[in-house]
Image (cartoon, rainbow, N blue to C red; front, side, top):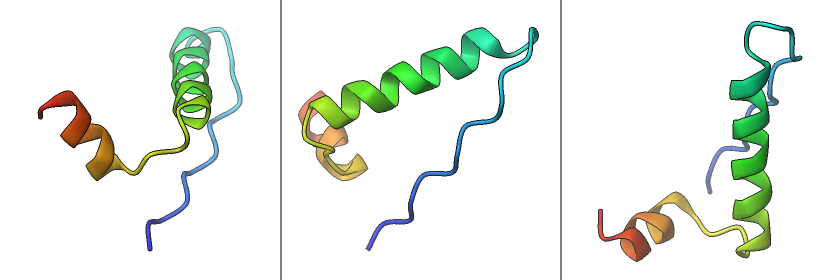
Length: 46
């Protein structure tokens, strides 16, 4: 079983863009059906 994702840090002025990007990627993964990392690698050809 996979480990759960760590919570994203609170945003401050310095890292808010990065945290927003990470949050958007998590939302996208959720909308895609929450594939495993192995499934995403297989789909991408990595």
